[in-house]
Length: 190
Image (tube, rainbow, N blue to C red):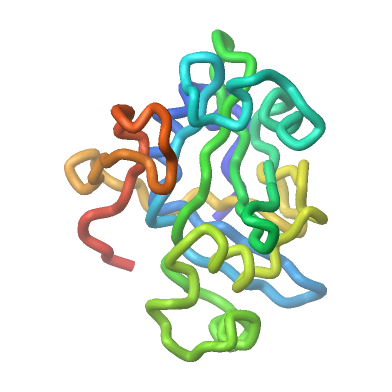
């Protein structure tokens, strides 16, 4: 398997969010590999999306969303958690990113359990803050190139059929709740 090329991310953010399902998020820590298949994502766009961090314009925090596609946008939220996104947008958009909300853990389970202080498999990476904690993702990975073997990257893997994807309103937002931009795999087969 190879990292997904930059061209994959240079498309409509909503399409990228769906197409990231099934791919493998990989974190390299020293010589250890920790990874999981992406099973839930959310798309965040720009001026047409009041729920996006970029809706009010470019800031120091969200600047990655305006920059080169295929990079990591990592932000701190609620004063205690990190969330990781893949910058994705087409030529018509100035900004956009896909929040990686949940993983199906694959490699490095012992490491994940230690980081999360739990041995309950279903509770390791079933939320954006849980998966960053399990994979030890922080602001240090902000701007990381996800398209090459680095400390954080995404591998091409299983393609999920559209009929196996559930589209719902995004989680935990109060604006643009009509947009069905949360995507989940209906039948996990990993």
